[in-house]
Image (cartoon, rainbow, N blue to C red; front, side):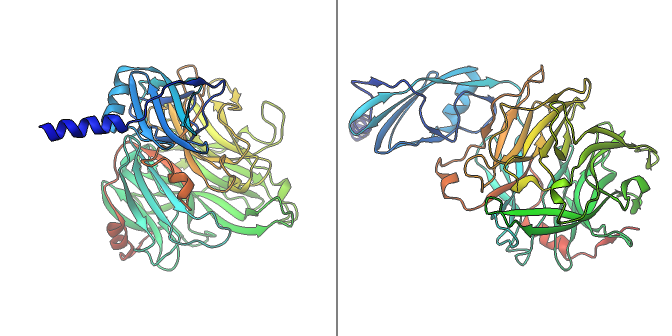
Length: 477
């Protein structure tokens, strides 16, 4: 008992605490940027570091929680963090730093905690931000509530082949799909934890599925077929351009093993891509552009947001395509639209805009837009967008959160950011996915690609995907 008391006193004596504090009229240089953000009550601890030289110690007061630490990294105890978020909703954060022997206290900032929880799981592809090659690609799932992470499919089990993004059906862990490319590849469908290998490249289709989305019932998958061309710019300020030389949209009937076609979705003079079902299953939203001479006229390639009716009962398409947003939006600026996603409650449609084309990940001007499907109003999301690429996104099941990929830090590496949409439809300042170690993003050489929120942990892993890949692919006609 005496030794334990000595140990406690020794730890207390070594814990740095502020004295003779000098006030600094500036906000602390916190990384990731967690200053004045809105967060869900179930989020993992916002561990961070202070980007200042010669930082010897920190004291962080977050509401009634106090953390003292040496160095410039702050790591919260997860149990204390959960208790903090459960008892306090407007948390004032004050940071004091000892720099070269002097304690400095920065201006306080806030964390606003809301009761609308975010979906507890996030999937994403980890990939190097290369131009034409890939290496050691993984698709992983990570808990948003803590730091539990596990692979879904990885390069070791797939002979280092490229794997396409993983997509949920209605954020359900028992309905999802991913695609493994290359010889013998196929779409790996997860239905209730049972994996099936599908061959969605029927005769007359220009390629197998590239971008896809489930119908509400899970019976149908709307997908695009794309011939994708990568090309380098001659301008040094631009790295790469990627465009479709051909693209069409189809629907796969998973029950009848049929490919459903409409001439309105596979017009030879129109590029169609990025299909997604409305939550009620009555429409397929997608992006369409009149063909231009490529690559010389790629800057004139302008995609519009359109939709076509669809009947889930009969599997029939409507006879008219309606345009919702496109080359001229509410602020009268030309944009090309991609990545449409509708909130599960059917109220909002989130999409990406760029100056041209359909591959905005290399476009620094790429931004998000929020279309109110009831009023037709378009929010330019000024509080969300950055000066770098803000692109691929998905909704949480309660329609109050979305995640998106942003390159705002360095213009090269994408990271997942979460944004809250309140009852009035106002978007709040987004925040980056927390990591167990605050220096994680400084040290990783992977981009987080195509983040997707899900309501539960997916019931399979790399071994299961490898076994499914050995199956004979189910044919569609």
